[in-house]
Length: 317
Image 1 (cartoon, rainbow, N blue to C red):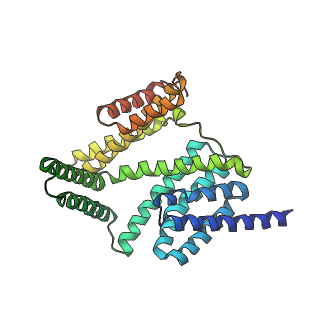
Image 2 (image 1 turned 30 degrees about the vertical axis):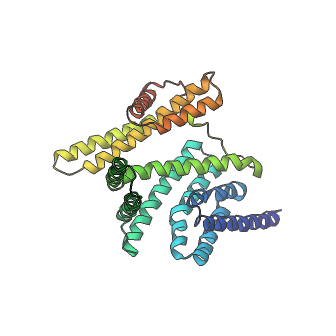
Image 3 (image 1 turned 90 degrees about the vertical axis):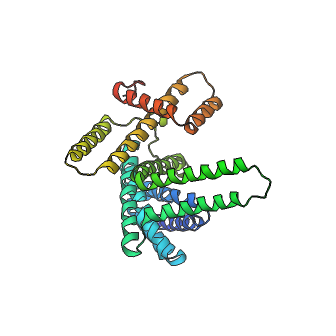
């Protein structure tokens, strides 16, 4: 029986390795595919154990390096393999869904920082600077296309478009160079959440059980999260009293808190829409419109999230 289990485990590991290599190859044409790289490994870990998932991931990283180049292989090894192992560990231990997602988020953040440091140390590439230059280049291409429009077109409209591109460039440069850490935190949570959600949806098809996430409408940050953010903000203000420049840290902390409270407020909105008599199609339209809106409405939703964290508007705790 044990021999049969080992044989089937090795066979499935080989199949998952092949799927991982295919996903890595497809990511050359569709970048979004790489974000789902951990999902097959999570399913394998739940079926056969974390050891076989880790072996499958390592074998895939080696094959990807051989087929697609060392640089591509290193990206999957450093960035996505730890994420997959962290999520697989939480799933194998049957941890709470939010806790497992937290494992994956932490692993992805650390991996991303390690990747950036290695790129800087080995290749001499400044990741943030390269991102800024790439965006500037794309803005310049669009401006050149607008400037080369045929004569007789609306001159005022052309000038307005060029001014809009300039404003977009300044805004994106500020975001990339100043609030990149905050963006990294949000991206880590979203990547981990999506992989867990996809794995849990496919679990039944593979005769396994992965704890289903209760859904965004029942999501809530722990109150300790706000306490930790408040403590870090207070610490930054104290350091500022000693003439230590912490403005960049403060900007990122405010961005993280705002994003977290907006997310919490969005969960509150979805919860009460689910409880209402509004049909599913209309609910989806309303939520999509909320995501596309910005400015004062986003701030209002963040305030709702903060109030919910304080007094539990949904009564779910």
